[in-house]
Image 1 (cartoon, rainbow, N blue to C red):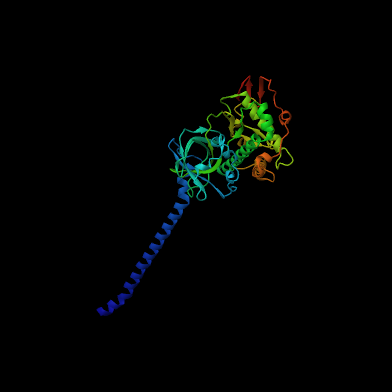
Image 2 (cartoon, rainbow, N blue to C red):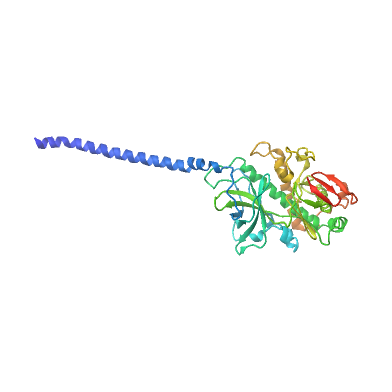
Length: 412
């Protein structure tokens, strides 16, 4: 009887054991499911929340900060245009002149070029120099053989992207990338144009004598390198330009420039309008403004950060009087940029197309330099008269963006 009762209870014991096992399996499955949810949240929601404060900000930058820089290729960011070519590998003409080369040629010697992308290390050596859309720093560069001789200036976007994979792009960052690429290609075009101008027979036989350049003097625009910049401490990244450091630098709102140097800059502007306005050149007639640099290291005048554009593509120019509502010319391309944050308007698209045709179009600057700058189109010697040049006897003149008295000028 007791044996029968014992046998009758066996199914109950088995059923209880099965229930416990099933419950254990269910609990394990739920635990695994919760872990998966937490892992998914960690890789999606949490980083965005935790890094939200980083979006649209910059890393802490000191005079001891170290950055990794590379000359990018391919697409820098989803939705952005392809990274521009490293134009200096196609043409770096100033590098072959012993005096001007070490001052304004593209600093390719500061990069490790054993593989792509080319890389270097930047050591910040100054406080920030703030512009409207860029921040500048004096720096040193380190290559495979240690610190590269001389100092450089790195100008980066004032908007940084959080580390890869941690957060969305900050609002307007894509446009910052596009604007920096346009700025880079504009500076390269100005550097090429200034080389062609300074080595042309029009300059040697005309402008150099008329404007009283020292013997062998030239008008030379700096050739920058476009880079992707990563702060090694925070892993945040942005884009920027690297130039060789100028001995002196004058920009909008500060400094004194001799009147003769303004005349040299004006003459280059008149020549560029005539040169690019020729039927054989692939762009519309282009103009220059926002002249900066004005580093005179005899016998040459060195320039940087100018703007090259088709005047028909821009809104009416502001009055000469500086007001709070008028942006200084430091970043003219950005001053006429799209009214909606993060978008590019028709003016900028036309500007971009003009600069690209200027550089790479049929009969453009790369083709001219490949064939020899001395064989470029010869501009007639009266280009400066047709351009509206002031006479040498004029001692006081008010020009757009500057006021000149006798032998000197102040940028307004």
